[in-house]
Image (cartoon, rainbow, N blue to C red; front, side, top):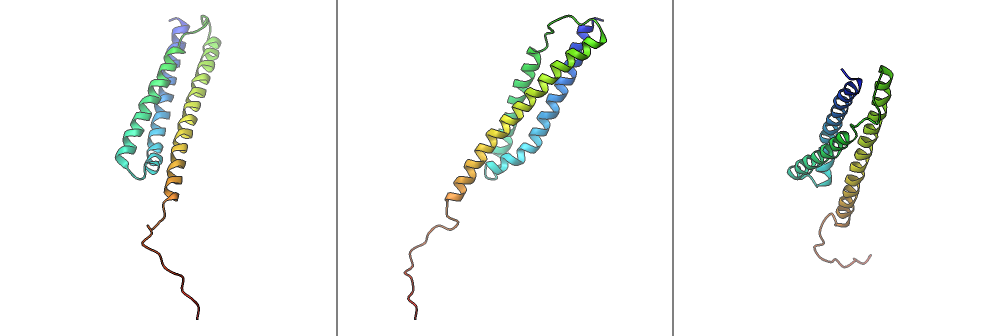
Length: 135
C-alpha cells in the first residue's frame, strides 16, 4: 500500500476522533454555561448548544478535509511521522482557536447578561417614604 495513503488514513482517523472528542467535551460543559447565560432557560440552552456543536463540526471537519492533500509523496516511515505531525499539529491549533473563540463569544454574552441583571433593582420601588425626624 502507498505510504501516502497510509498517512491519509491515520490523519483522518486521528483528526476526526479529536474533533468528536473536543465537540463532545464542549457540548457537555458548554450546556451548563449556556444555561447560566440564558438565565436558566434550559430548552434554549440545549438548542444553542446543539447549533454551536453542529457549526463546530462543519468548520473543523471541513478544514480537516481541505488540509488532507499532501504536498509531496511519502516514501518512508519517517515521512509518515513528519507529515502527520505537521497536519495534526495544525488541526490541533485550529481546534484550540475555535474553542477559544467560542468561549470568548459566550463570555461576552454572559457578561452582558450579568450587567443587565445588576441594573435591575432587587425589589421594585413601591413608593416613597419621608425621612423620620429624630426626637
